[in-house]
Amino acid sequence: MNKKHKKLAVLPGDGIGKEVVDEALKVMNAVADKRSLHIDLSFADVGGAALDKYHIPLPDETLQLCLESDAVLLGAVGGPNWESQPHHLKPERALLKLRQELGLFANVRPAKVYAPLIHASTLKAEVIRDIDLIVMRELTGGIYFGEPRGIRQNGKEKIGTNTLVYSSSEIERIARAAFDMAGKRRKKVTSVDKANVLDSMQLWRDVVCEVAKEYPDIELNHLYVDNCAMQLVRNPGQFDIILTGNMFGDILSDEAAMLTGSIGMLPSASLGKYTAMYEPVHGSAPDIAGKGIANPIATIASVAMMLKFSFDMPGEADAIEHAISAVLDDGYRTPDLMEQGKKRASTGEMGDLIVEALTQTLES
Ligand code: IPM
Ligand code: MG
Image (cartoon, helix red, strand yellow):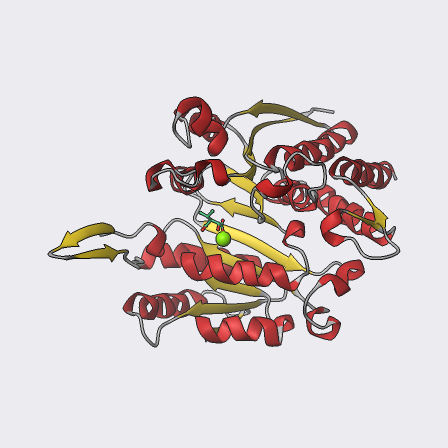
């Protein structure tokens, strides 16, 4: 059989980034071994790791490698060593530039509850039992990138400005991405805006309504962002796809993540014009870096998203998710999820257990 060849750019970054990426690569290699897939890995520096070596958060070589690859796997960026850097030299700038240069306008953040972890949430089990939602966040526009921006002197005062700007074409393409994805799921889109106050958000609502006409089988409703934040903790089971802009998506996706109990479980995909990027939703967690206690599941689940969206291997993606569930069912927990009576697993042990469960499924 002809082997499928894929070039993967691996950007471990800072803090626990390298540890969790190592485990995700074990899983990726297990899939490649069992299937006719050849993965060509290239590693590159990003974030603080790149600042230390090259004095910039995203070196040109790293960006070039990403553009030439079939997918990007990123660990995490940031940490206390670089916090005092000026704005344009913070590790986080690397993420923003990657999003912009790779044209990654659609950020997909699924939040679902693994049954064995239902008691890890701060919310009651009956509230979160049915959570299976995706935050579809616009990622290359809105207030994150709008002009004018900056801090200027105005007499004795300083004035800080950012601009929440959206064009109809930017809204259209993210709305289509959300409706298309809803079509493969429970066929419901909740568009979240602040149309009662902000002009750019009135345009958001108008354009989403226009696009909705092309998708008569998808149910569309609208929520103001404050109401959505409230509904997420009141009755999260009502959501299928939450479609929203860049900053609201940033906030709501953290809220959605925490409903499930641990932010250490949630993967993400950023899709757009060029190479897609996959990364855990959690950050670099410098306080626990290097101790072998980080939870690698979010990064492993990000590999599953990569197989689904970039490599057209949905069966193998499902197999990874099943393997994660199986290992949790068997009672293994990284320290962030540890409960009495469960079996404690290090970062590396969790990776090995998932590989073992996955290998069994892929062989059967
Ligand atoms: C995220 C993060 C980033 C964002 C930061 C690190 C720039 O919070 O991916 O949600 O604000 O988009
Ligand atoms: Mg965020």
